[in-house]
Amino acid sequence: MNEILIRGKKYIQVNREAKLGDLVLAKTSGVVIDKDTVYEVNFMDEQEGLGHQGAEELEFSYPTFYLYDCNRTSKDFTVFALKDKELSERKKMIKRHSNKIEKYRKKIKKLENKILEASHDISEKDKELLELKPTKINYTDVLFINYKGHEYERVNSYAKGGDLVVFTENNTDWRYSLCNKPYKVIEKRDELVFIGESGDEFMVYSTSHNRTKENTIVFRKVQTIWQSELYFQWTQKKVWVTKENYYLIFQTT
Image (cartoon, rainbow, N blue to C red; front, side, top):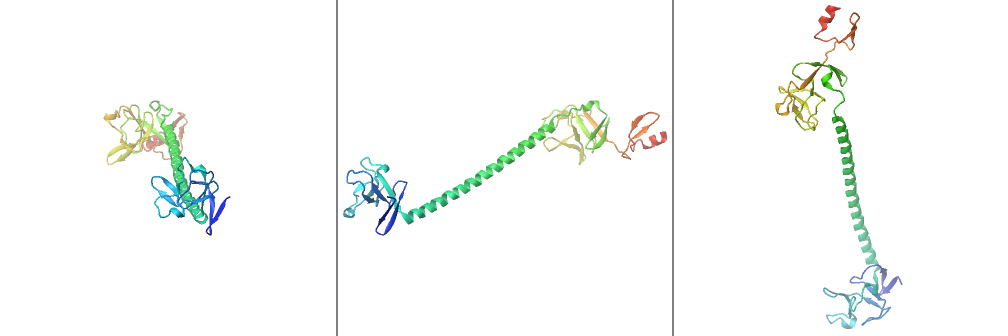
């Protein structure tokens, strides 16, 4: 029996515990209840719980019986709920669950985005760490270097804006600057700075970090007039044409 029709109202069987307004079908006989008899759940006591109050007891303040009295449990009853009400409640419940699911879906999406961003940051950090590894070139032994497509020559002087500096000693954290790595010098408000590993600006010369002229190698950009190299046949020597040696070269030739 899946449906019950009482007083023109249709009740359907539900798989849950009884509520006020439901019908219950007794599966067993016991104190004041009979097996296969339908009772209306129409009484509620805060301490004793749900019960059934027959027509003859309506003028009294106690029911015919309490549902879960005398060792009875929910397994002793089959519950029927008003069809329209139950369907309405089910729709509301489905809607509530759908809203919860949508909220959780949005939360999951946010978490997925955060995880994706974190993994991207980690991969970028790994890339940065790889870039931070000191180059295999030992700059203390070279006179010329190629940096971003431009030639730089080593000079024995203090750095100035546009130069490259390589620190042979550096008393600071690796996240700020590294030894044996070229940094571009920026002249800013009469101060010489460079962009460190953290992306911040730092002073080129700093006694507190042991960055002095003695342990700072300076490379200066070669100012070429032509984008070509001259070879003197009489010396077979490679010479860069610069503003400084322009007249000297052509006087010689």
